[in-house]
Length: 128
Image 1: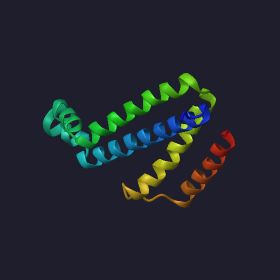
Image 2: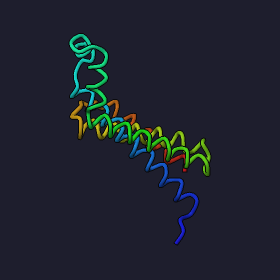
Image 3: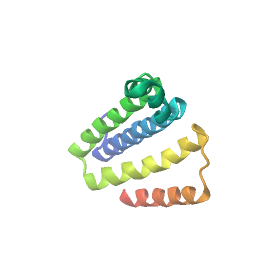
Image 4: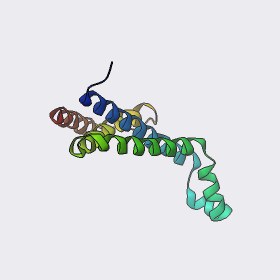
């Protein structure tokens, strides 16, 4: 069974959103666990600061997720309109970042952000 062109496009958009959100959340977690880079640089120099970042597994996986998101984006825009893929992926990434910031990073996501996420969902629905 072959997927329709529209279904294939939305699956790719979903993959872009998942990888992009994973990358954002993992790199944010990495930088929180690493701490203040200025202090690390003052203590260990630039090489120590770079080593602290690139030796963090959350950072490595975050960068890999961002790279995967980019390559899926390339695949998506090669066979779908960029006027659909770009806005839908960006808007849905905003929404999933808010959810993951609340659930995984334990950030305070205020009512205004949730309202904007709801409006973004309405806009993505109109893109269909």
